[in-house]
Length: 581
Image 1 (cartoon, one colour):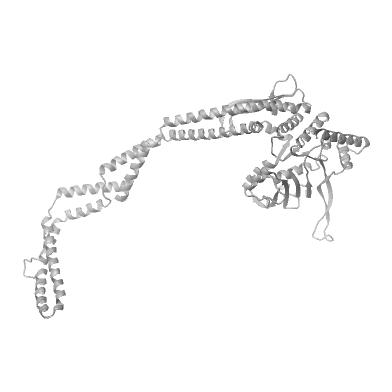
Image 2 (tube, one colour):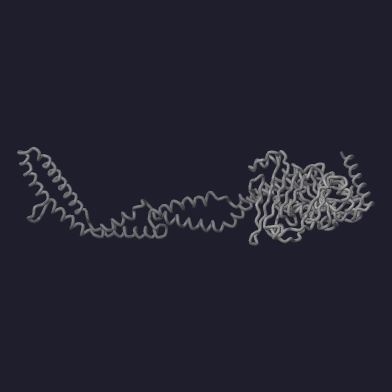
């Protein structure tokens, strides 16, 4: 319930504070007095669209603050959103609107916490519902009508609607998987052909160790220089062990050194270590000579092997250019595409299996939609009977109303197109409500619709903006009684021109415009004054004030006849409230 509204520099309002109460709160005043500005401010603080025009001329900042009383469900939701409640279990919402350099910015806070637009929208749905005669557009929208019907149907319909949403999402995923599989089949086959060719090519090369190319290149060097290697081997052998000339070999020199050191050992045993080292060196030189001689004798020209090596090197270099650049990278690529090829051949679902899966999902979706349609038809029958009962007291005794449910392709909200069909006059065929209802008929229909939802809805505050435009007399009285009925379950805020409606109010406010002299300049003695228009609201908290306001609404002046009529309206309203209580 909205308990307090503070407004600063909003449109024609400079400073305003309003305290609302439970039950029916009514705002009256002359046409253009600024009643709708109050509702605009409520809409603004709850996240409605704003422009620079809402900021009072001569200022660059507007502020709207609203205080709502909470309930257990709302308190639990706020706790989930990590918003702390204030001490008296109230919800304090503020919105600051500023205009600088032609740009409009606003900041919203809930209990002092800065929040975004999405949060405010969700909170708004839990706090306030605004109904205006202009909602004729909504009545013509199938989506809005569907939401109304589903809400009226209750938990069973809403739960089945969730089942439909789950089934629809599963069907969409299956359909997307199938379409993706179909559209990618050509690419898959092309990739399959490419990888098959590459695996075959790399497999035929019989790749081995990553250093095979380096080893082959070394072998090629050896085969290309056999004669040089033989000559150099023999030269080393001669130098180490056996020389054809007169020059001593390394083994000869080491032998001489061994003899001398042996003689020295006889005189000094410390030389034994050096003698052992020379003997080891001599043995090493002899072994090197033997091996180099064997190496030289083993060398022989092998043109056939050289050709094989050259061919293998060319083959591996070709593979490296295509899959490398190194042989190790080519081998790694070969291993990777073998796995990819296996996946393409073995792991991909066939189109046939995906078609079966899609058909199964469609069958489940169709079944869920059919169940939802049946639940909606049941809810529609109850709504038809209930709404006709609510409309009859509103001077629509012969009205016909029907909820038309036509089948359409399945969507996330079902397979139904829902239209409100309406005939206010006997003998006239049912037609779409949004196309044939007059303004007064639409007002009564919207009010009756809200009455159907009044006990089921959890919204604390319902706002009606001139819902009674275009009606008078008995119909206005019926609307007043219907608003009072709604106020037994919700706080109701109503802007009206009807004295019959205003008389039923539990709390009555008069809105009017006043022209004031505003001082220009920083100091009063230096400043000049200018006339400014402001909106003022008076709480009519005693019988005399209410009677005068009702007289003004009824007769345009406080004539005795109008006063007497106003008194009768207040008496009639009091009697009605007493009977209902």
